[in-house]
Length: 170
Image 1 (cartoon, rainbow, N blue to C red):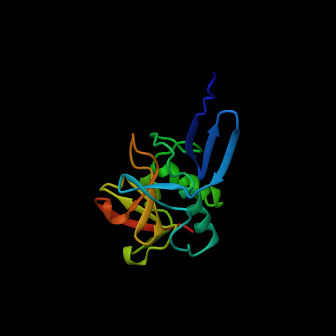
Image 2: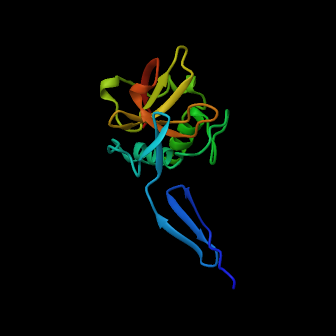
Image 3: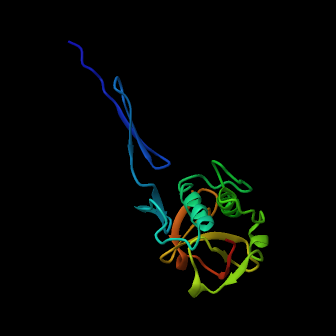
């Protein structure tokens, strides 16, 4: 008597659940991208929680959110790994907007925005001197590539220490 052995593996791959069943091929089923919130995986982000003020900002937000789960690598500018400013410059490049490469240079680019007036696509900066940048996505959340060992994630803006300001680039 022989027994058939069936193995099932699931892996999230940029918004698509891939299920491989031995002998049955690959089945693709769409699922929302998973996001790490506050450093803990949970919740889902399929699109920006709020609409961006224009198409360039929306494209940048959508592009940044599509990178959730990609690894942080110092100095990386994509397409498969990022540091903080690499993520924001990559996202805006997809929207046809060229922003400076470093968080410090990005912090002086565009127009200053008060925290109370943030809109999706605005770049938000942290620490003094500025050494970290993320992208505001609406409803008090941002997407960023934080540090080694942590993938690109969505977190609460208020969970980040030492807020320094924001800039609108599109």
